[in-house]
Image 1: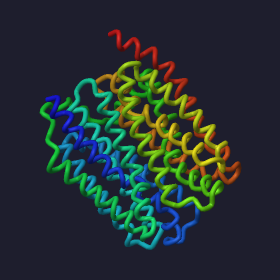
Image 2: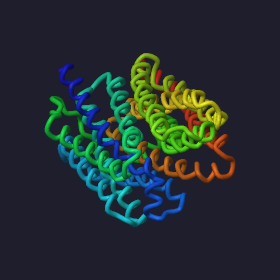
Image 3: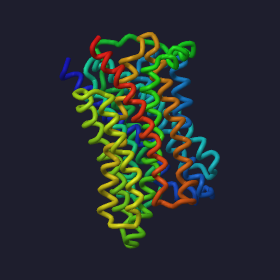
Length: 399
């Protein structure tokens, strides 16, 4: 059983990594898409925000109708990844920004059948002590989200269409692995369908909402950082050394977000099982808040200095992500765990839409040196709520 569980984690993680390459497949080539579709610079933010918009819509739809509960979750994952790959590759055929952004929204809808479903599959393989397993899964998600930056390193001299094609091929590969290689878990978890009638119980459960507030602060920072850090690094490195090669900037983005984030997820999963989820989230958010404030002061300075801060930020900004959902699953009543997790995820991704679009507006006013300081607001507020949540976590452990 143990060997089977870790083998399943390998396949789930690999599939998640490949499928989530769809998330930023258009963002890394946004300048090219803006030129091809004749869009304004502000549309770059909507290229990124369109995916979480679709994700929220898809998550609400999937949970409301209990799709992952009514059907085999492996098939739900595979079909979602397959449809996402098709929608993504259609980008190379459109010449309109409206239809392009619409395709990105629909791609986000399909990803709602990938990420939450992968967590569900993993929970069936790891009914207990899943801290490390969830950390590894989120690490795969992080690497997958940053994978287009890695692809750009090798394809920077060819058409942007190859980036889209590569991410779609990876998504198709993930669908194949989950459908034909991954097996069903031997023990099924108890299914708790989503119901809007249970939302009241969620919002009146104080420890659940404290964990949610911590997650909301975390999400305010996370996706805005993932979206705009590569742009910041490009501007900073180019100012310090105009001859900085494009492949080096793309590699720096991949390392700062993907490699560093993946390491942070695994470390966070290991540590949280030892010191508690609340303590881990507080430490992570403290470090990420400091980085969001400090990194701006390195703008245009030595590349190594900016790069080091970016790596630290990349590790800390995601290391606590899985633990917020784990926290909710531990303090919510079994009858509405599904509702509580769906509520947390939907509101969290809605928040990312605002922070992603706010960064370019504020950047034009105060510059790169100070713009990321507004992201520190999220983890600071998150730390306050998780300090309060820690008391409930301690009481829950004693029961």
